[in-house]
Length: 404
Image 1 (spheres, rainbow, N blue to C red):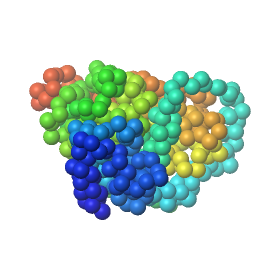
Image 2 (tube, rainbow, N blue to C red; image 1 turned 90 degrees about the horizontal axis):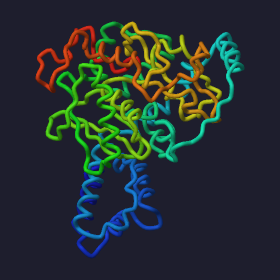
Image 3 (cartoon, rainbow, N blue to C red; image 1 turned 180 degrees about the vertical axis):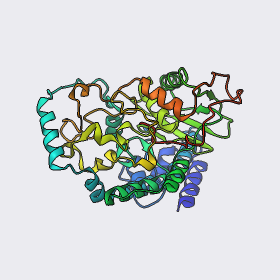
């Protein structure tokens, strides 16, 4: 089916000509009576490519040059999202709703503690600054892409999704994995950029987006041994482009992988957060010891956001002995996924309620990243020139969950 769609797209492109508009060709391909985005969503629902994007105003593409550009993008997006199988992964976690609920249920003692803490919190009304949203989760929710991503902004491979589902199953049963399984999981879940991180910008990337990404790169590069280099010819690299919302894969996949900084995501903080994922970090509130520091308030969570609050197990989460960091750039804000703008995450120490989530890389973030990549004692070097580049002991298996 995927091949059929690609052939159709190519036929439409070749037939566009200089006098026929690209929009009319796509209109004919998908049928009339509905906008292009709606047609593509319907095609997605029927399994014809896992496409979740917006082409924007396509009515002005009336020449061959423009047709080729847009058709190339359509083809590329089909390739990207089919590889991730986002819809199937989304459905997998949706089918596990009851099991996820079981892992999030509070004991009477914990519920009492939560209510006591909630009674001490003052209501805070925040002004909206950006129309797309003021956080990654808001931007992705408003764009309609968050529901298809794990924890709002993560694209999982099928293997990663299967391993996460297995972890949820075991957590619901109260079971534990063996050490051997743990090591295998960690090697599979997040490959490390041991030769430095190559990246390149898609031609559609705006100057604002490029500046934001480079600023995010510098923020990580400044105090770690990790080197970044813009190189579109590298075998392994990150393609930075403005898709719908802010999202990334976890760790190095091998070959070209994508990182999106769509509308509203063009800030240093959001870029640094997504780069953190690409380097191998999950979210801080996914830590296996999360429940010792914050309480997830089920009453305020949207029903379709439950999987955003799943935690890792000890076998899939290495924190390198570092404490929970409320101010981590990898921690979402306290009202993330809220159905009523009330807290979904409440710290045991309510003094930290305003600290949860930060647009800045914290000291703990840097310390953990340095541990993750074995940067201790490693001197900064020019890209790819040092034999000691981020060497790491075997015990530092590709973490992925990082403290995040």
